[in-house]
Length: 539
Image 1: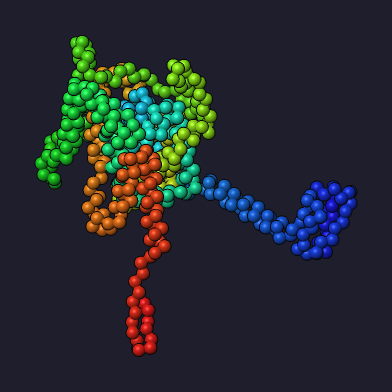
Image 2 (image 1 turned 90 degrees about the horizontal axis):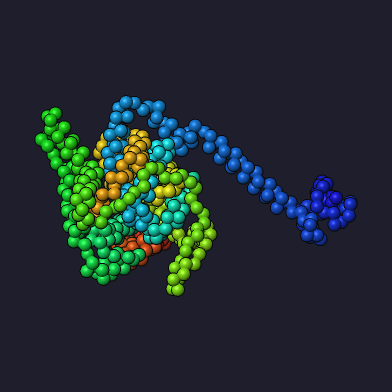
């Protein structure tokens, strides 16, 4: 026992038995006794620790109380706000919109799986789980959750077609997005300026376009950068398949023609007759579902050719039917590497090894995902604010759920969002119907996918990414502020010459440098007014 007498008060401290059973120490007020490493008393330090513990306890209590507040609960689960108002008109609008998007996402899911380097069924596995989760946590009716071309390309460049790493990437980036949303880090999107976003998107579209020449022309497109891909294409161009190329190019022209059909006006803009409205709606529906129409047409062609013994196209082949096996992503992996002697060596990768191999992609992908989703929401928000933090939580949970279904990353693509909005969507419930359509395809339509030529799936991607090149932003930026072109061009060139996830970091870095330079050397306008010969007023 150790008794300390300080400022006329006696305190009893534990853990000072080195001094015997009864020791009394006299310490001046505010003093510090240093005679033993086991018994050190500092009044200020003790008070500071108590204040810190008290503040931490108060913060935890306030946080726990806020979690269970009605306002917080409605913010985290927006379905609680709009579901009680759901009526029959909402049901009809969401059902039509959900089915329309479902017919679009099925062929796109198959095509995007080819970008990631995975088998085609994993594209469908990526299309339904996030839809169900977004209904609960999503904030916008115009977001159709699912795989996108940019997310698929980033997944390939980071995961390199490895299924285990791809699923782990989906899981970890989802967790990071949820944490970013809870910590209110949605403001980070401000560091990805418009010019950087335009440069990144344009470069990504060119890389995706080039990568799909592999299936369109049946040539080798190996390489991590655009330059490497074109070197491989030139070297292998003599092995081009003219049959697949002809079918793919024809499919691209058909898709672009059907896309143009959606802009056809039948009759006057106002005061249309009933048959004119029905005809225009039919033409618009056919043009919007052009990917599904193409898949059906080329599937029938492929089936007829194979039945007649004419195997002239490279087909998709067998796609397993049924739902995926739901399981937790693997946090370690065992691979076999072929040595120069022809022997296979077993390689064990731990969780830290796998995370290290994913690298900067764990940060870049959430930023790009938030960028795509917020751009989609703002495009159809009619001036309403976008809750970036809640969208991070919603998209993050969608990807965590998708990883349990063995799918790859997804978020809100702008192209399908436009289709959803034009289809008359009313609430987030449309995602539920889209997910049901995908499950229906997985259970009963996969045998028909066998007869789809691969060049047709490549045509679906090519006809979409050519509109992602944002060349129209150059002229407005040149007129308004020429220096904005520097981060955009820097991001564009860096993404073409370097891996995509490194290229966008270079663009963000250039943009941050410009921000810091402007903050360090602000431009001030000083005006002087001469009141008299001796007095000058500075305004």
